[in-house]
Every structure is written in C-alpha cells, then in structure tokens.
Length: 387
Image (cartoon, rainbow, N blue to C red; front, side, top):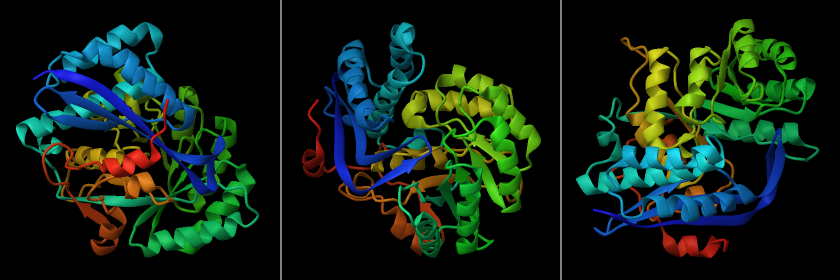
C-alpha cells in the first residue's frame, strides 16, 4: 500500500457573536481537516490545530511541503514517515505550524491503519482501559458585552444542567474582574461541579500567584495556562506556591519540548494537544514520559468533530495513573460554544451533548475501524475556503 495524495480542507463560517480569550477575540469559526489517500482505496483523516490565517498557512505546509515528502511511502510506516518529515523540517521549525501540519497528517495515517486492519484506533494503541469516558463542558468564553457576568452565570448553569459534572471557563481580564467572574460561576453551578479556569497565558507568575490563592478559596480544581508557555520557571513557581493543580502544555510541541516541562515538574496536570504537538505518533512518546514522572494527563481538545473523535480513542487507551481500586479517570474536554464543525461535520455526529445528558456525564467508546467516523463532504463543500 502506498500514499498517492495528501490534501487538506480549510473550513470557515462567521459566528453570530464574536468569542474570545485573553489574547484575542474572533468572529470566524475555522477547521482544518487533512486527508491522506492510498492506492488501496483507503483514505484517512486528521485535523491540524490552528484557526484563521494559521489554518491557511498550515494548508500550504501540508500540501506543498509534507505531501511531496511522503507520497509513494507506505502509510503503515508512521514512525518512518514522522521522522522523515521532522528531520527535513527541523531547520525550518521544530515547533508551531510545521508540527501542527504534521499532526494532521500523522492522525490520518493512524486512521488508515485502523481501517486497513479493521480495528478501532484504540485497539492499535493497546486496547481500552475503560468503556466509558467522563466529559467536562467547556464554555464561558470572553465577550465584549456589558452583561458578561450574567451571561457566564446562565451559561455555566446550563452546562451543569446538561449533565456535565465538571466545567471550564475563560479568565484573563485582570485579577479583580477574573475573581468576579469565577465567583458568579461558582455560585451558579454549586459546590458539587468541578470548576477549572483557563487564563491562556495572560499573567506573569508574580500576578498569577496571588490570583491563584483567591481561586483556591473558590474551590477551583485547576488553573490552566496561567503564564506564557516559554516561562517554565514561572510554571514551577506556581506549582510550589499553590495547592491547586497547575495545568498546561497545549502550546508545547514534540517530545523535546515536553521533556523540559515534565522533568522540571512545571505542571501538576499535563494537557497535550494531539492536533498540534506532532500527532498520535508523538503523543505516545509524550504520554510515556509523563507517566515515567507520574504526571497525570488530561488531553487538550479544541477543534471539530474529528479532534473530538480522535481524543476519544486516546482517552480510552490512557492507563490509570497511578492505579488503585478507584483511580481518577481522564476527562474529555468538550467545547459547548456554537460550532457547526463540531456538530454537523460527520454523517453520523458524535452527539456528545446528547450522550452526556443520557449517560450520567460520560460517553461510550467509538465504534468501527479507524477513528470510526465518516465526513459529510456535502457539508464540507458549503464552507470550503479557497486558498
């Protein structure tokens, strides 16, 4: 079996209301789907992290740089392909967009392998450690509106009412405004729902530590990306200063980038983004390193239905850490804000929201070979961006 074509699809549509996080606001929803075709008639699909213009730049990397490197190779040789691409791109980017692009290609190869062997990808990863996956509802994104606190209160209550037992919100407007938002969300969801906050590296460690102490009083379960991803010492200082979990890793790439984060004990919870760090082939190495240092892993998930489905396989195959009679289980991050690429992209939708409500805040495992989904290309063609 040989690779005959590598193609990607960038999809976009305008949001009814802009959404944001500490670094920016955006009015377009984007998805970047990668397709690898073989001479056996098997096609595989993955997703590359990055929205807006980043997705268009990544599309060029996928089709103009990576594609010509791997056409004619055996798609089952994912390690060989990964190292060939990485070595040829090393001088041009060991992090960032080249790795995001490689991630989408690599995931497509795993999808091909699952279809070739007639097995779900989690079987190729060693099997499922669980038959149900807990899901947490992510929402409460920043908006430039006068009633933001009231919106956060309504949205967080709605997430809890849908059956989620944990939720995550954005912060990063400044310590005082952040605390007002967290206080109203905590009041809205009550004490029994886990609450996590995500600052998207809005602060310095000097600012984040006192803010973290106040967040601890509100029972926040983890403080995500409190400082810039390059500030490893800042992460370490926060871990030492605070009792709550410090989470991060979504903006890190490859085993070499994660090495310093993990060995330095810079996070209490590691959040690898498989659509960005280098794909499943590289994710497995990061996971092994995290387990060797007893750092729990909760995958970062941001993207379309493809990213959601891929992470369901990864979380199914994630070992309990450290084990025991009742170990804490990994959670699937699920964005509850409006996203047609999450809800309508597949012929048979993942239907996470419906399943969470019916199945006690959890979902069952994917079915079928590969990642187990079929993309609706009639839908894709409605939102395709011509590059």
